[in-house]
Image (tube, rainbow over all chains, first blue to last red):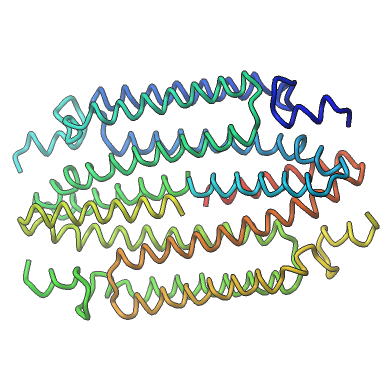
Length: 108
Length: 108
Length: 108
Length: 108
């Protein structure tokens, strides 16, 4: 693992693992943004509450799919980089951080 | 319960229970839309995956708060209308429908 | 609504709405208890983590089905009783209480 | 990573990563089992539905804490083993498998 790539997982302006998937993730988020705008129209148009709730469930599922997508890339790149770096403390920190992110998603 | 009010809970262009709360709900959804646009910027700006996941959790919580808000109004108006209408079948149908919507939210 | 039935929704030793469904709910909870004991055996027998996680998801789904079942009965009986009682404050309190319970389930 | 240890992450009767944490995880699951038995008593004793729903939320949170615990160990051991093994296909498979398990937990 060369230094530049390792750095990308620390943040900063470097090329992230999801650089390649960026377009797909942004497209997915744009679709979710459109769905949230659709929710506003549903309320504006006095649509039936239950239909709005059903649509909120769909948006939540879309966000969770995006989250799992990001998590998968994070495990495959940033966490893997830490684990192959030989720095056990850094590897443990990355795993704890990813697990805490999952715990937050589960509570949300 | 007069017919017109009962009809409002069926959909159509009538005044919904959330007519009064409409502005608050739309404002909340606009804030969520802004957060989803923020997520796109985070990906575009190569922000750290974990920070994006944390922000997704926040958006999910916002959507769930909106859902509970809508559900509360639905129970207080549409379901209550059905239950005070004396039509037991309609009352049961409304309760089943609301419970199914909660089940969908729980799975999302 | 006669007093005795209204009281049952306040708690105490009265006959609850789920009196009739009690056996079904207890049976479901017994099955969930058996699944949790199965989880302990899986850990004891060094089963694969992912299989244990899959089984935890199944137990969670079982608990949520039980929760939706209880909620449905609660809306159909306790909340309906409050809404047909003509006591608007009590009706509002019951709806708020049920919505708060849903919010807790969504965060868990 | 010697072969035997790598094998432990595939299942079988070998020593798992959670061998050391086994007692803690089993203790946690025993506590959850006790809570589920408590739920049965609550239904048997005609406790108030909302109190039972609150307790179901607590059991769900306990199960999710156990799940995050198992996931953290799985990432730190089984997934890490695959990632340091140099077998890119195996590493990718492990990451996909763990992400799919998280997706199942999020939907439950």
